[in-house]
Image 1 (cartoon, rainbow, N blue to C red):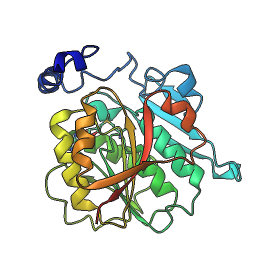
Image 2: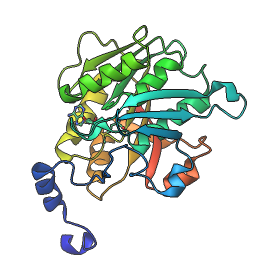
Image 3: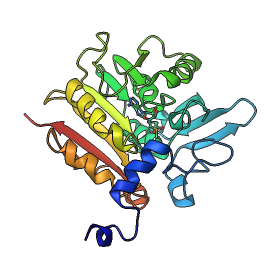
Image 4: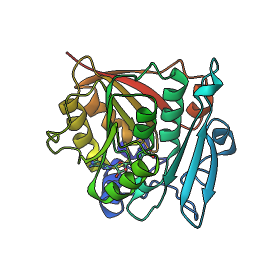
Length: 262
Ligand SMILES: C[S@@+](CC[C@H](N)C(=O)[O-])C[C@H]1O[C@@H](n2cnc3c(N)ncnc32)[C@H](O)[C@@H]1O
């Protein structure tokens, strides 16, 4: 029966095997590794920020529009991108969608909040939160990504309210990270052995009052096991007030708001 259920894709046992052999099997990474143009369809590009990529310096400049009421809220950011430390070294569309959403919500949305970004990669989403006036932001990831995050933090001069911290899901939360008001995560569901670890970390960081914005790109049926684990601790709903939603949902990207069950 199971074979029939998964007849159009690998079965879940194979998924697990491939995960262990090659965790990045489900990613498409283009030759230039700019992290965007080679990852997104033309339609999706229409809702992503403007991009300029310097192949020589491996610097990606992203230019986000402001919200409809105030074009002056436009934000630009320079990021070093480099796929060599892992899939997080490039900027994924989900991170740009979450960043665009935060910018569209305006500077009051995160103002004065403590924000933690999980699986931050280049640091994009957390750096945008810092630019938007969060009181303090922790951009976190595994050790190999810390160098690129630190460079991006310095390049954008955000050291006054943002820090880079190693946070490996499933391990204890560093004592330097207090309970945050907001948790942000983009494109963090892709490696099945990490599913329970990510749920544990969300559970350890969040309280019932924490706002969690989680931008998810569906890649395969096995992802539903993540949501099976998540639902024991969290409820979620889709974010409906993003004007770009109709376009990115067609690319299997969903922006969700999670809340911890009491
Ligand atoms: C697809 S990348 C997304 C990066 C970034 N959020 C973006 O959307 O551009 C997934 C990120 O999750 C991080 N990650 C994977 N497993 C992790 C773990 N066990 N602990 C912490 N971070 C992890 C990776 O290092 C990587 O930066």
